[in-house]
Image (cartoon, rainbow, N blue to C red; front, side, top):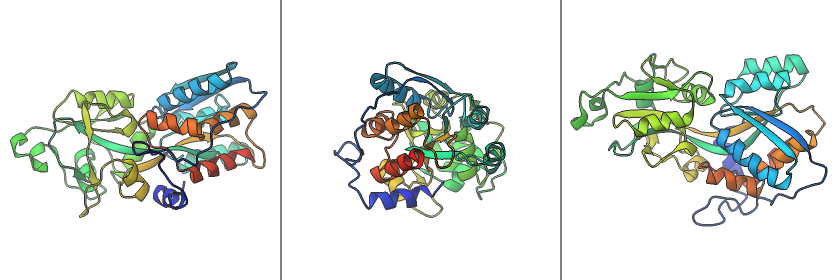
Length: 319
């Protein structure tokens, strides 16, 4: 996958990114136009982070095609590659890029690589309780808080006094995270922890909503999850590269490359080179990448793609 900042910045330079002050939807995104002859069933196996999005897209898609059924299972990104390889799903939603070994196994079986489709933008956030007064965190502090091996250069941080909260000195930081099947777990491990090991005290949760719920109910907690799972009980802490300023986990900072944990949300498909996807799967993805589909991305709390990126994705699956 291309660097998110360079890809989006190029596209953003070509388009007007927002159609209204409160929305980041690109006015150049095309409206979805239903076609004839679409029927049958679709199956999606993969990311928990994209579970709500896939469900909402399926609901919108079925309004255009009532005879289409869409089955969705979201137990973690690591379940996507095997399902694609076994042919038990047409879609493999992932919140991280496929690992080299996953791509190699796919290519060994089919003779070509899986096709990666960017369908939205996420800010992977470090959440604190809504009443937590902390201004923000550096990535080295994040490493020191969550990692046992601290390969990103952080120093061990286990209690709130170490982060400058004198009134909370001595109070341990309660940690929430995802389980190892999760793409969010893997992405955070790679980009925030320098591929280091998590502390054994991180309470691993089966889903992103459980992470946010845990943090929202614990004044002294921190946890990581996609921005789309933000609730009124938590706040996403601004993050900074070492020595830099803090940046909020918002659309503009993801677009500019300033927020350090921005990522594409992905769907992988098994597409033979030189052939378009089967019609029903193709139309589903075209819907997700349309104005209506990207409105759903925004309503679900994530950030929509610039039209130039969406058009590039449609082209990649159409020929």
